[in-house]
Structures are given as C-alpha cells and as structure tokens.
Image (cartoon, rainbow, N blue to C red; front, side):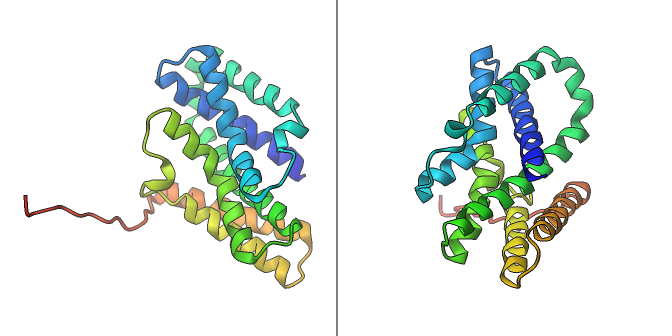
Length: 204
C-alpha cells in the first residue's frame, strides 16, 4: 500500500513541479529536472544527511523515468491541468504525509534518536518543495505562513508516538497519514496560517 501511495505521490509532485517550471518558461529538459528534483529530492537530502545508501532513485532508477514522464505529460496537457487545481492540492497534501511517514520509517530502521526521526520525516516531506522553489526563484513554501512543515511534524509525531506504544505498523501509518491529510486540507480550506514575525527598522 505504501509503495502505491509513494508512486502516486512522486507522480503528483512531478506534475506540480512541471507547472512551476512552465511558469518560469523553462525548456523541456528543465521541466524534467525540476520534476525529478521535487519528487525525489526530499528523500535524497534525507539519505545524504543520514548516510543511508544507496539513494532511493539509485536503487530504483525507474522512479526517474516515472517522474520525467509525468512532467512531460503535464507539459503536453497544460491547458487541461489548470482545471485540476483542487485535485493537485489534494495530491500534494497526500505526497506530504506519505513522504513524511516514509522518512520516519527510514530513520526508525536506522535506530536513530526520536528527534532525528521526526526531522527525517520533515526533510523527506518538505525538502523537495524547497529545492523546487529555490530553483524556480520563489520563496520556499516551507518559509511562508502556510501550514506545511507543521503538518509534516504532526504527521510524523503521530506515527512515531503510535509506534512507541506498540501499535500495528499499518494502522500507525494509515492513522497518521489520515490525520495529516485532513489537517492540511482544513488548513487550505479555512486559510489557517502560522503567526508571522514582522519587523520594521524605524531608525532609518
């Protein structure tokens, strides 16, 4: 089940990344690169930081083909994609929680401290989007007021907590992902935001 959700997640992330690349007038190679970096970058950053080798896309190079194909399909069908905005928001939220749980599982399998496990989940869920935004010259969504990283932390925390208390692995994954998904969708629906720090230098 988790593998199927992962494939759906990387496909969806690749498609949203392709649209972001299109807004920056990138060529088709650039579109594919942005898509692969977005879909697979979070896991790659996690693996490099944790020394977890081989990287996912090195072990499964077919993931590169899947993400590139999704990006090219999006480029070809771009006029239709604009009508699927809500679907993409749902799939992006699904990708966030799926990547988070996978990142936590990897760190748990390495028997790392709980704090590192939680950070591993957040990096896996969020780093790909950060790389996309940086390459597209946007302020990363992670640093803006939207509830994004906080959703990842809640999802990871629920998964880690349920595992700590001996819950069934599949039940822990499904429960944490459902709560995280609903949290993210409610945040989008009702425009929930993190508090902002606003500072103006009045001495000038």
